[in-house]
Length: 464
Image (cartoon, rainbow, N blue to C red; front, side, top):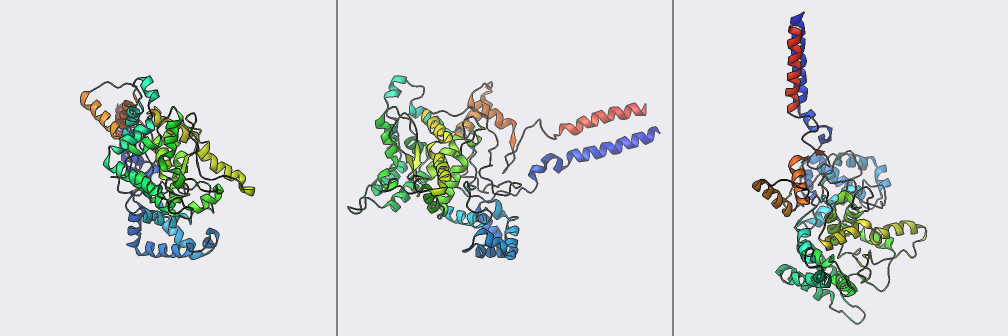
């Protein structure tokens, strides 16, 4: 009888250790179906190399040509092609803003996702990879630049926007591209045409895409104490050419024009994804990420949906595209909602103020909330592009801080940087997921040994 009990215990022990050590128990269900990150250009190459995917992709492009979604899905061949492509790398692919083949990448993305949306959506999924950085050198330099920590009297008298322009002139690349867009946007074409808006927009896009954010953000989001400073901030993008027009179009009409262009549509979707007001966070921003919102806002400059400050008042921050809701008819409520995402957006306002003050919310980094940027099928996790060299990550200031803490053996305190170091060193973020695994949660290597100890004691008791 004793030998039978011992045999049963050994069998139970063996099965327990196998289950605890299996990859499925360590990884959890959230990793099921996860694919390596890939951008849409690379995903297209992978699809082209596979005959089934390639033929289905060609079919889908033909189905989308000149048809609405309902008509397309009524065709069984089109529906079958869409189902196959949902299991391909094309479904989860994303793009990087400013990448070499950005337009091609976005064209591939929308060729898939326009077939997945239920008609015209108010908030569209962002085709860009999520921004995960929080504190960075941009905010550190903003603090130095805005005079935070300096003599309050001197700081209050400073024109930070003028100082930002001077700082830009000290950088060759910033000075060159700024001089270029100023020249183009100020060039009068004829007495009736003040400038070439198309060329002005292109020059502005080049400036904000190619100049480091530490210079562009300073000029765009500088803090002001008087009207002269606020007016200089408003004039940053040469609004008489790039922003204003004889009449204000309807905002929904302007949105419709923007969505006919893949680049403009993508930048607007990204703005909504990163700046849409959230009442479940400290800052009113998705994932409490100021930097993601500011980058998305700057990314819209140089398109039909270009936003700007509505006046030169230093007291309040109000931005808007050049549009109104007059003539909206029965769509007035939707139009007002769209416009309020700019004019009455607490996330955007807080982010601009935080940058101007050189501050950021003191929260530990967590996995970014991809809710606003997820594709319609929520059971899948959006993947990131495979080339992470240009993707945003933890700022260099955080890396430097963490390195110095490890090298010098400093004691942890409640500072923002050290809080990030501690979180970075004690958590693991699953790539392409918003899941954060803490070392003390879930199955661990210590658990099989603990089970072995307990079962060994029980076995000895029964044997005795």
